[in-house]
Figure 1: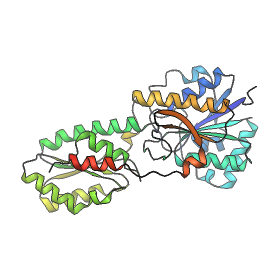
Figure 2: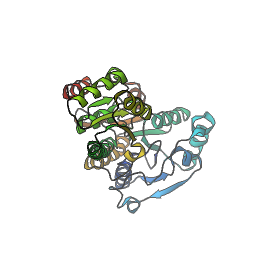
Figure 3: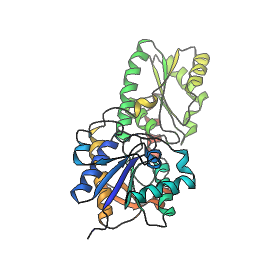
Figure 4: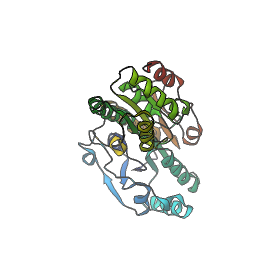
Length: 328
């Protein structure tokens, strides 16, 4: 018989479109298998406050199309300390929680691992990757990325219209911290003239960009779009420098948290739903401390510790393609 009787689910860190679909997957698949579910509010902060709601099938009705997370989210400094982790573990024990399903990114999963370690392996933890940055090496897909790049793409398309009308150079800064995936996808999909990402600083050399802007302008190009990754930043300073050095009106736009919100795409709804269900299936299979992943066209799971230890180089074909498509 299944020894898992009751589980908890929470969302932590930055929100990502599709989180609600994953929550729905966890809750309904668990209930269908006789497992009780509670949802802790506001991530690890809510766990430390023992703030939760009972989850039934109706509690996750009509949420698959909603962005954000119905469980809310936050980052907790208290949970980063051992005293906070001991407190969280005590609360989980008092609530008779056999396993904790966490939706988030790298920090969320490391926190879950600390809970498992603190419990001497008694608390099972399962991670579902939900981050728009696509910066978890062991999986080719993370919940929210597809929506984020489509949102950014649509934003740049609109900016190009006004940039062309005013014959401007436009720098559009997208999210991604230390990962350039959003910038690369957005840049290629919108036909941007330049893409600046942390993984390839040479292509983002400001002096080379200024030279390319001048050449494009002499050839009669009416706009010049530069996609800049959040990890590089300094978009406003770049805009001032380009305008000063070229005489071309240059504007910087930071899309910011616009990319986190909005209705999730079909892909984010479907993949998130599958990952949520898979988290429960892993528990039913008796596995411990797993991270749900999508790799080589299949949904599977890996050990959380091993998965977080993986690294992957930025795909060079993205950089090569961007350079090949550059207007020369």
